Image (cartoon, rainbow, N blue to C red):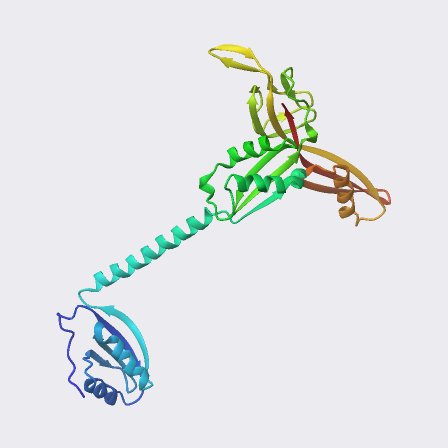
Length: 309
């Protein structure tokens, strides 16, 4: 058996292994014949060995051990250059994280598809053609265009629409389109206000001409003034016609009476039929017993668009 010796200071990097198997003396002598230098040899019993080899010879050591069917497990690295090795490995992890973050950021900024919703989605072919004309196609970067500006451009390009919303959801562009059936006026030069025709909560305000008197989150009643026909020019108030749209989230309740307690889904369907053509954003059903029957109160929240101009 080769004489045991300590790691020399001139060995920059070492690897320490645990070896398990029979006839370990033969294994050590075989490594010597193969030119593998061993350091800090510690035999634990008859079938276990702790040994250190230089980093450069660790692959050869590992291959020989496997070839001779010894169980081998790496315990640790060592040597005076160990801090440099750790720094190198950390640098690799850091570069990997940077690359992964860059790929995720790049993919998150890439448009992979467009989805349409709302009553105006029947015009999605026209809107899709407009997007293609604008250069907004699959694999376009979201950062290359403004969704708010795109909303205005789509609305201006199609007279059949009264409301357009563009949102980035993951890697898709979701476009909500609403038809112009809710218009309360036309651009004829004498429309100087936009008033609410129902109760609701303001979800969105777009004013092209005029001055908004409400903000997002305000509760309004039927008849309330939403946009007034004036503008302040050089500290003077000037009367102008109004071009604007305001989106409200409204609620409506419906009551249905059934003989059984299993009519919740049916009540919800009946209520939604009453608001056909409206974009329903939330629903709730409460049940109360009324003698031998059951009353179902269905509350629907829906989007209501008002526009003028």
